Length: 126
Image (cartoon, rainbow, N blue to C red; front, side):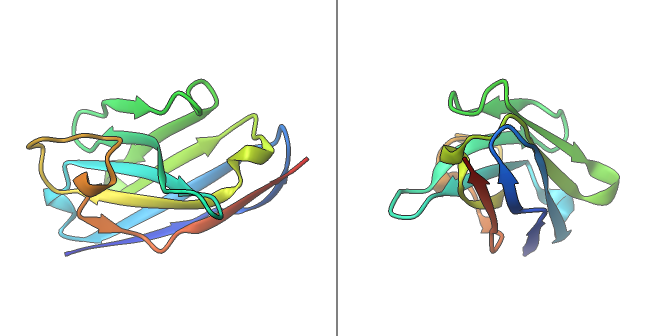
């Protein structure tokens, strides 16, 4: 079992920045990768970014590439998502997720991930 707790969401003006954190606990030594997804009201959950736990290989959705940066601190078992140049369309609940196996790892596919956090709200005002 892996427990994930997100934090860092809030209300920010367009053009502003936020840093989201996802603290992992439990069987973290078995985590292969971590991902961030987001879900806006009335929309499906969509991929934002992912990072492999050991090698630090990163993946980004086109919608956030160049504006968001994913990073991890292995010593703290924490993954971060740095959100810059925020737009109103970035408003959503942001979820982190953990994948426990490199087999058939598809970073942008929600079903790839085994554990999910409860989410943190990000609201961007225009």
